[in-house]
Length: 117
Image (cartoon, rainbow, N blue to C red; front, top):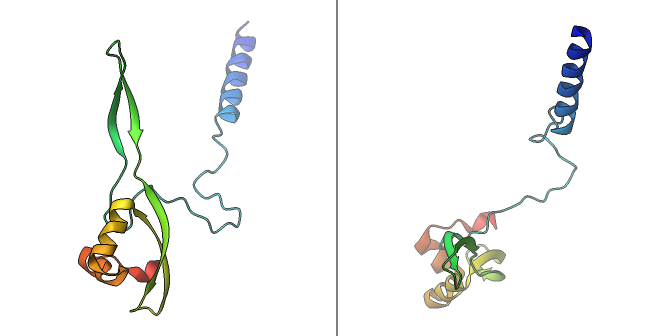
C-alpha cells in the first residue's frame, strides 16, 4: 500500500514538471531570428498605453481594458546622419515633428538618439 502511494506521488511530480516545462529553458531560447519585441511606446514622446481604462456598461459594471497609443511607423530623413531613420511615433509625436520642422530638431529637444534607428 505504501509503495503504491509513493509511486503515485512520484508519477504526479514527474507529470507536473513535464507539463509546466520545468526542464525547458525559456530565457535563453534563440532560433536565429534577430527580431525582438518592442513595447508599444512612442519613440519620441514616450507615450504608453493606458492600462487603467474602464468600460462602464448600462448596468454600471466596470470592465478593465487597455487604451493603446496610436502608433505609426514613419521614415524621416535625418540631415545630421545623412540617411533615413524609421521610428514608431504616436500621432501626437508626428505633429510634434512637424512643429519643430524635422526629426533632428525634435530629437534634440526630447533627448532622442537617432543613431539607434
